[in-house]
Length: 65
Ligand code: SF4
Ligand code: SF4
Image (cartoon, rainbow, N blue to C red):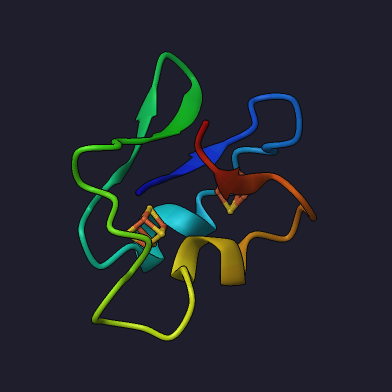
């Protein structure tokens, strides 16, 4: 399972990129994206998804699919 970033809500603040323990968040063509092959939803490392915890935009990061 992976999380995804809403391009409509993301302000590009970059907070999520620094927090990800799996380096799953990257900027691509001016937009922040989560690599679904790397995102584990922080399972086994943190109690909650760290990107979601630091994102200032409510609803910006949510479950993919
Ligand atoms: S949920 Fe965790 S592993 Fe997935 S992108 Fe966010 S910080 Fe990275
Ligand atoms: S923390 Fe939220 S608003 Fe900031 S870059 Fe990441 S997804 Fe976008």
